[in-house]
Image (cartoon, rainbow, N blue to C red):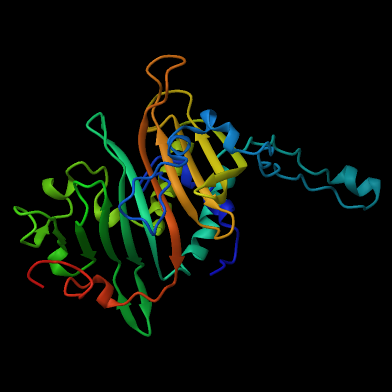
Length: 332
């Protein structure tokens, strides 16, 4: 599917606000049991350390300031008798203004995506510990009204790597199953039962920075717009646009936002979003904290990468039913 407007305009905001849910990795989708080895190091590093991935294109221009109206072409006497008021001094645009306008406009285009599948790769820092990369096959259906029927926001995940979580399956459907996550592990002890978990509870949130209901591209954009407005009110930042980045061979436009000063409410030093140039959707988001000392490496906070995205594939209720014969939920 080709969306109406360029998503690289839209996701200029995505990088602006360190947020929500998937990571970097380079794994062949057809090889689920083979750890990714290519490009992983480059994907996990901040943009200022992966310049060789990026082109030398200049940053996109910020919108021009207000244009002062010119007086009409009437007689000089009329102009003198009715002088125009002196123009007000131009107000400098905030670096995030252009991105916010793009995002708010392009969000409507994102809403043309009913559903999608992908391989999601995520890595998160939790309690000052950086976890392993996790690979999972995902199906996501966006909340919509179709033919007068309310279709709920729906998520299915099957974990592929690392080995400790391989085989885990998770389903969450808004408004169903008493709001609980349906999940099962593998193994002798935990693989015999489907658990019903509170999405905000201790077990569901263990080693996770965000609850499952915040997952998905549409939720990501809404949250990032909210955070960008917050960061805009807090002060200035540096916004850069670069072409020529690649995520597992996919040509992307990378947008980077940097906060030099570590202060509230900023929750990242540098954040990046990579927009697939062909699909016009974001396929990677990453944020980094402030280095502990000048010259030190910026610590990764979280990163999420969507690989092999297929949009509007026609997902149905069966794709989010634990009784689906393709799934392995015990008791269904």
